[in-house]
Amino acid sequence: MLGTHQLGEADLIVTLLAEQAGRVRGVARAARRSRRRFGGALEPLTRVRAGWSEREGRDLARIDSLEPLRSYAGMQAEPGRQAACAVIAEIAGGTEREGQGDPRLFRLLGAVLDAVEQGLHPVTAVRYFELWTLKLHGVLPELGYCARCSSAIAGSGRRWACAEHGLLCAGCRGRTETRTRPVGSGERAFVAAALANPPAGLDRFVESTRTGAGLELLLRGSLQAFLERGLRTYRHLERAVGATQREGRR
Image 1 (tube, helix red, strand yellow):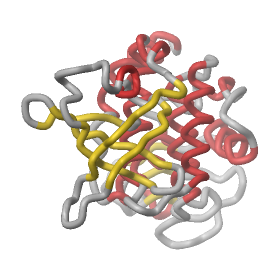
Image 2 (cartoon, helix red, strand yellow):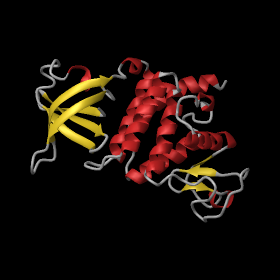
Image 3 (cartoon, rainbow, N blue to C red):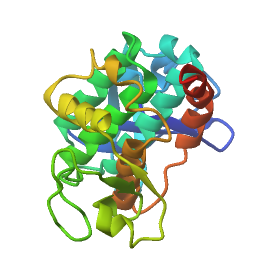
Image 4 (tube, one colour):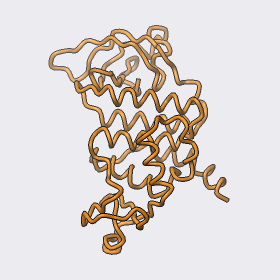
């Protein structure tokens, strides 16, 4: 369950991520009038067993049943976790297509949510999900090459993230007027560890994955370029965890 939106006085538009069918959008009739019909299945990011009917000539399916199987509602009482879950849900809903299921993304979503519930820092979880979403769609920036001139960047060489252009070498960074941020060795170490390991256990990279750092600019910019639009939920994450991270660096 990725989310819901109100429709009329009693209905809800429900957005699901199905393992085999991809993104599914449908109408849950009278869901706002009687919560007993769908119960806790309407909570954000609840894993459900869903039944729906496709309707010829209609963009929206009819949601016939939703049975909750696994709830993450409890952990979302904490603002940072709730904001991270909102970002993850928006990314998943934006990158998946209707009728084109991707079991890998489905498993990724479950693994990241489990890791957050078990204590992984919310922002580290978002970076992990961004990284692997880009990887699964074949658009993850290469950290060893400049996106502008295609020149190789040595392992210890300076490199900068740019929201519009990707990763830049020192020369190309000097020729762009767009804001850039450095991508340091800690951020590159996180990328290497995240590509080789599940999300649980990566909390040692909290500083490298913080909001406002170069890695965020690179991954978020790459996602928004892929989607050709901005992602609205990031501002909630910045508000929820930004003050805490700044305090921790003092």
